[in-house]
Image 1 (cartoon, rainbow over the protein chains, first blue to last red):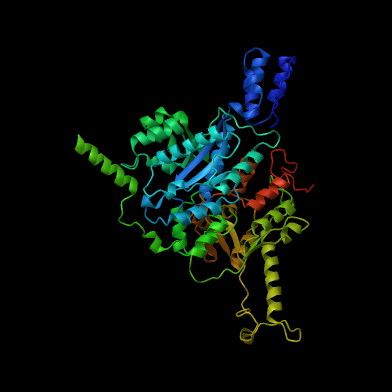
Image 2 (tube, rainbow over the protein chains, first blue to last red):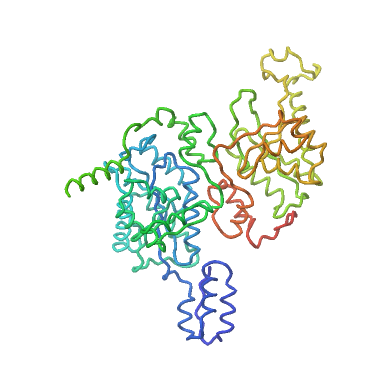
Length: 335
Length: 232
């Protein structure tokens, strides 16, 4: 959208008409808000109406999970999350990060991280803004989600301070190229200026299943959940009519930080879970059009999923459960 | 989701081809863009498929063609190509014979013509009940002579639709209900709405189709052919 040029001496009434006619989207909305304001100095109004992006918060969407395998559903989460956040007029989504969990998570059926990373990279090959990050998957021990958020937030803060004009991630040439492309493509009509004040904020992108997993005993530490919603924020894509709102209402912590939890309606029933994909593969059924073609080919070529692979970690306790139960025991024994 | 249901493994059939037949512009359905676009988009979507193809015959007719006539057309095309395959030598009589199966270079069982079946979603099965939309004799011909492969869809009860119709009940052995174990309700209506609102449809449509829609300005909120079937 073309930024509204500041014009002095224009009578407020005609100025308002132009702004209101700005059409749908964040600019038009802001124009409407301006028009509804009571009479005040034109300069102050112009400050609000000029559509440069300095008042928007830059957001990075981070999705954690097994991605075992990545599916079109996962990819849709990013698209839905981006459209939603951008449409609020308060945020500008600049990047999406897929962070596959490490093997130490010990989930049943979890195949080695390097395969899951490669599949995610194949899946995002044609994305201008979503990329894969391997930091979490390379850690020897399982990493709590809040720590992954913290890692990426700190990385963004460092990158923003030291190199305002360049990529925050210099050790991966591939990703740097993508970042540079993003800068060029996002605003074709005006030069992109990196704002020294606006460090992008990382937010956790997820489906309703993750939100509802907060209530599984010993899966999450309450202080972690609190930090996630208080310091970072959640963008939760849910099936229209799901119980997510009720779930938030019934949790004191989530209720307190509900302004930081964005529920996004998903109108298309999208049941493409990785579990079902693996099941279909075991039964020789086609997964075409449920995962990106490159992912389907990779799975086929490497024969990744079978009854054997599904038996991985059977009888092994999930890492967060083990850690949280052990810590609880330790704390109670110390009391 | 217009492509690929997951067929139950009964071992009775071997699917050899899939045909997508976009409807004629004269059908007059709301938001229908010009058929040459719809055919082009289907072609792009099927670029990487080795068994599904687009056939523009229906869309190229002078007027809207009843579904049963489309089936008849493709059936006769199959007959023609089958006759050609069996007897490439014009000196021989073009009739199927048991011997042709044993001749080298001839596709085994070419004497058996593939069955042509109508593939549809459960919502189409439901429309059989809409008054005046289908002729009863057409419904009968479709299920009796050809057969139906019906993919389930959320909110629909295909078994119920069959039981509620005497014709469908009579030929229910020729109606195969393919359950879609992984529900994926991507409706074109939703996609058009999302496009009209400037929302992303990535991963709902193949990238090549999205690029085509963008390059030709289709389905935007100010699209010139909204509701019309005429090409510009």
